[in-house]
Length: 61
Image (cartoon, rainbow, N blue to C red; front, side):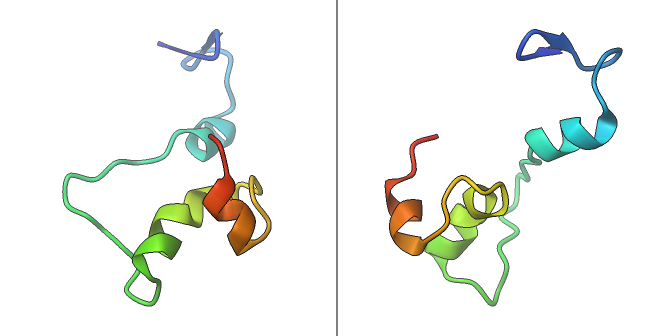
């Protein structure tokens, strides 16, 4: 199996792989202390792709 042309079983650090590939649950698992928007934007925010709430609304992934 490959991610961005790299074999994930032989040539990728496990920590890097887990950081880049997010888990998808069949049952929603939101953080109860965050709004819906904040739950959805959490991955973008944690990975440093947007620094402010305005940037989060305009982020292109």
